[in-house]
Length: 128
Image (cartoon, one colour):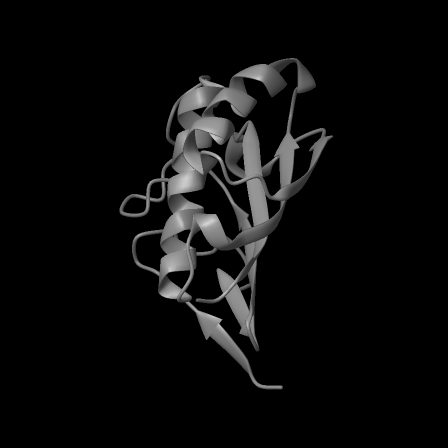
């Protein structure tokens, strides 16, 4: 099976030695996205986990688009939060953005995220 790296300028460049996504056959494995502005690379949303979650999902959507997929083709997400007390706020935006589509999901609390982010989301999706 061929592996193909995909990249979108509408999502922030990786902050380390990894790819935004790898396409393997009909599956897309997206690296975790942080709430970074694609143009500036700066953290978006300040302390507001809702604003950060919106930016994270926008970034995921851009990577998925560059990989011939979309949010409605996501099969699994993993959400990383620095404070599970913010789960409800994150979940409101998550539900709004995914609509009636309900991918399998895990949510875990972590001690810290890169660049001081409060939320990071990674996903697996199917190509169109």
